[in-house]
Image (cartoon, rainbow, N blue to C red):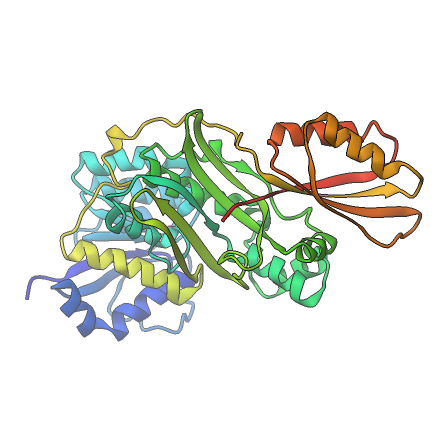
Length: 428
């Protein structure tokens, strides 16, 4: 049997330990499938003394990830530390400079520096594999770069942050307000150290920018992603959307138009009976629409030790088989710079607002919608509370600019209480 493929593993957190478990527990099966043994020869982490529940005896230990990346007994550098600057970036650069392939779970690193790193890797005849960086155990990168390579992709969309999906699902199921479920998620360890990475949409936007690059042959353009988190979603929105047959999801959507590349990670309404509408808990889902294949749906665990480590090992096994492809599907020097574009396609919108309980208040709002060229599809007024009247409106298709004009004009009516909520209804 050929010589083993030797891994240098940087990071012994949840995912790193998961990689060690797979290598140790399935060594014979992996060797048969890869055509050669796969071993871990050296590791790097902050604390060499902590018990991580796996056998680290016989493994060399490097204090600094850069030193690990340069070791002669490492063929593939596996980076599962996280962070787009500092050690993760420097060690990845060092590994490529030393002629090693890289496998990473680090979406932030690639969202910020992916094109530069891809150029370096391909100039050296190496590659960077990153299945674990997007949607955990779902093989979406491999699907786009291999199985769907014969398709012109029309649209990519999905739920790509399990924490946000958990929060929204929990709010609906338990009837709890956002603030309470947020604290519950924090106590359960679901939130990043900086919670805004999750609930602000940043983590999911990192992932969307990587999928966009592969799907549309463009340079990674994280700065072009329109982002809005879920912090403004209330239990009232959850309930009212449900009354109308919808659920609210933090939904990523990317598509190439004649004006440029649209990328948005924002709360949207989707039909309750759609695949995305039925997605519950911390699960992820990615939907790809291709000109030949039509629409396909991939669903699975978006995070966690087993699913993420599984994705890492899938990439490592491909490298052991000698499979190397350009980092983003086509050579880095042929990736085009994307022109960022805001969505201009008309869509139905969900509008929720509170109006003063006085005659003619609703008529003034309807008039402002008409002045903006927006027609009403459905409207409901709920029981009055504290002297104001909650109103929910679902519009016929309208552009975002027209919706913004209407929202601005609502404030001139003198009947609006607080700020209205406007959410796009996505066709899925």
